[in-house]
Amino acid sequence: MKVKTSESYGAVIITLKGNVMGGDDTKNFNEMLHKYIESDKKNIVVNLKDVKFMNSSGLGMLIGGLTTMKKVDGNLKLAGTSDKIESLLIITKLITIFDTFKTVEEAVDSYKN
Image (cartoon, rainbow, N blue to C red; front, side, top):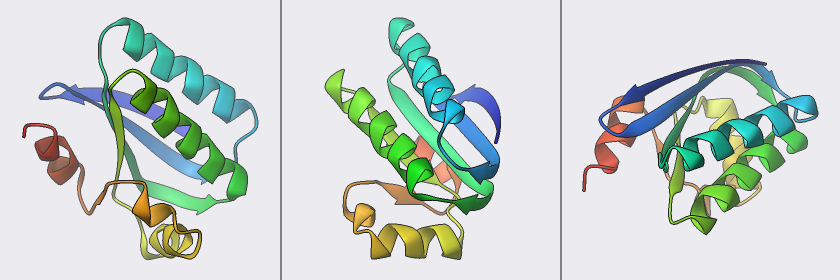
């Protein structure tokens, strides 16, 4: 899994690319979120547009990220979910706990309200 970050209108955009399989990536993802929290950046958008595959450990990584952000009155929203990832979220009922958006722009805009 490759990770790229950027910022837009007060939101941090974390773009994931490749296969999201958990493991060491989970630790790195969690450390990254804590660095943003320390910088008082609590609005996170995870861009999944370039994710080809995600397993249960990858889903666990996202759930852990959401939990981490909620504990500090922040949020983590998903953007660019493919049909495959979206059906995974529906099947696991995680679609009910994540805010999902078709585009990164829509997700970032949702923080403006």
